[in-house]
Image 1 (cartoon, rainbow, N blue to C red):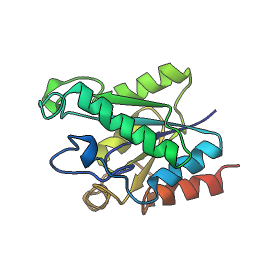
Image 2: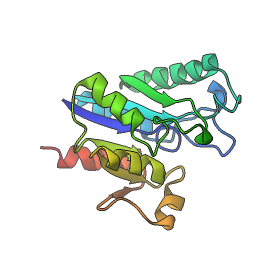
Image 3: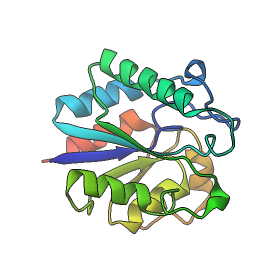
Image 4: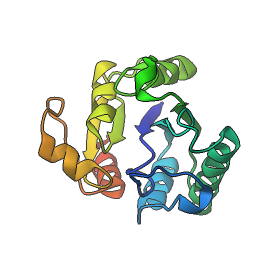
Length: 180
């Protein structure tokens, strides 16, 4: 089974320092939906792992998060793709949970759901915490320059051998061209 893990904000859709708080604020990055469709057509199972501390901060309710994700699922489906599941952490950074990236909890949930080790599974993110969470379970971190990616790259400290791509479409192009 070919599995890929994507961060949401900054990878699939534009990010916001004020959080994505409504379906209207969720806007796909050009090429991201088509990239997910390409993965789907090539037999990849696409899942999302995302921190959503806006829930704990009271910036939006669970129904709103569900509506945002429903919009994302519809947009991906209209492009011909499929996101199988969305794993999210609803906690704020100070809550010391195990599911908030860079901790491995979301990735552990994905491994349990799919009954597989995540060693070598590509995980695309735009922040250091995305990459650290992936590396902590042996997944293969890939950095995109969209979202917080440029800032992450400039900050250094990336896990060893982390490749850098312009955006999700570029990362998917690389994966599909190197997958045998």
